[in-house]
Amino acid sequence: MINNRKVRLMTRLAIFEESEGKEDLKLGQYFRRDYIRLQIFKNIIAVTIGFALLVGLYLGYEI
Image (cartoon, rainbow, N blue to C red; front, side, top):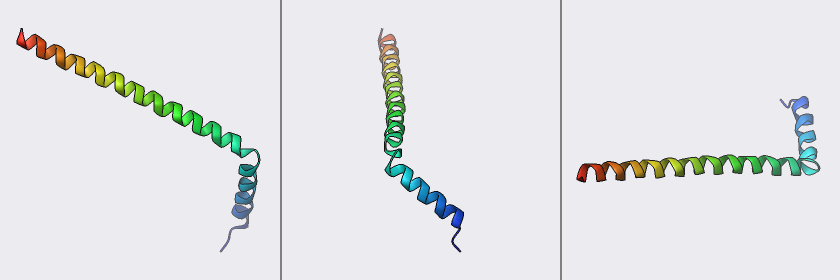
């Protein structure tokens, strides 16, 4: 059975997305991309530090 309340809510949501919601959706994607970039940047830094530690341990062993 169709829930009329949910149908009304989905209709209002669709109208909102067509008018004002376009900018809101763009802002949401912007922040998501920034979060992903930050996580990738932190991962690159961690891998670089780990590699430097491994090279340092290897050089220390060879000396």
